[in-house]
Image 1 (cartoon, one colour):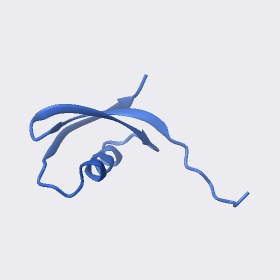
Image 2 (cartoon, helix red, strand yellow):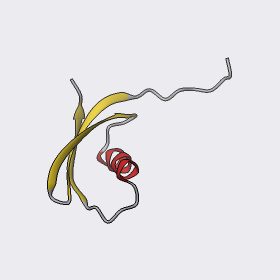
Image 3 (cartoon, helix red, strand yellow):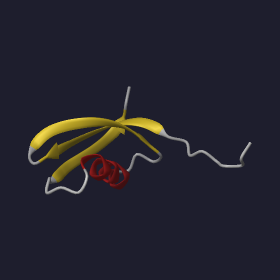
Length: 61
């Protein structure tokens, strides 16, 4: 054992609009907050001029 603790994550679905186009992604998040989901989407889409809006998070089935 290395002594590292692993954060507990849950699979969520993130519904959002990217440049006014409806999209969704699945992500493993710790808390499932809108802020955490937005950070995951920004990491996924990188540093672009894309506009991410209408972020909604729910547990995946």
